Length: 70
Image (tube, rainbow, N blue to C red; front, side, top):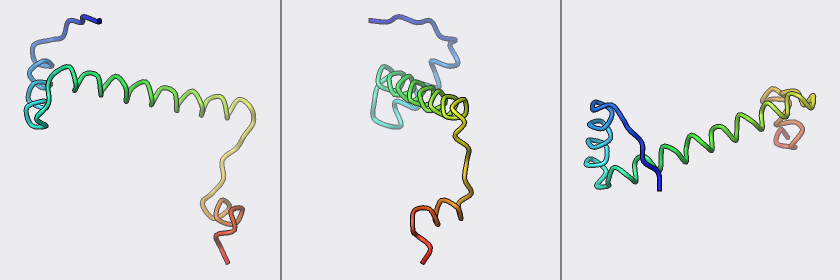
């Protein structure tokens, strides 16, 4: 169980979103936290790849490497 304090305006925005989705405040906050954690995980993977020297490729290079350009 987690209890947090939010500004009144933020609570009202969450309530409006929940109402428009036919949901509740807890579900909206839970979804936001899950998305945030997933985004952080993705950012960590990018940082790790950069540190390991894995560079980026252009779309045309990637298509060629995957054999998508005939």
